[in-house]
Length: 98
Image (cartoon, rainbow, N blue to C red; front, side, top):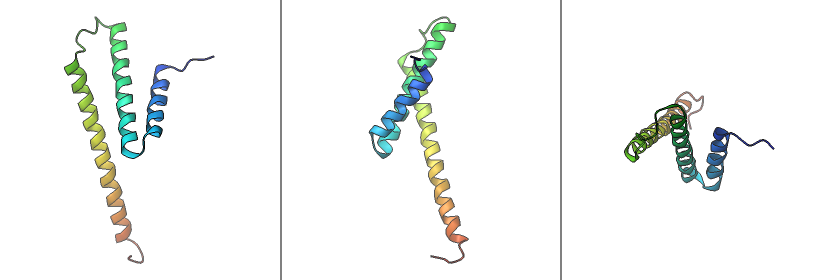
């Protein structure tokens, strides 16, 4: 039997959490799971190819995590703004105003 690779397993874990929890909580749980898997992958690649993982300390992991969390929040805000603008444009250009 073929074992799934690490990236596929990470996606499956994130999807499982997204389905387990409803709405925003599911998205946040999936984001956290994917970020943890991403950090583990970066650490594994660095351990295999670099001088070691001594420089991967808690402050470094925290900084990477919060940068990714900020980017995710920014994309959610952009998505909401785009959806709101799209709805307003549809109302503006509708043949019959509602």
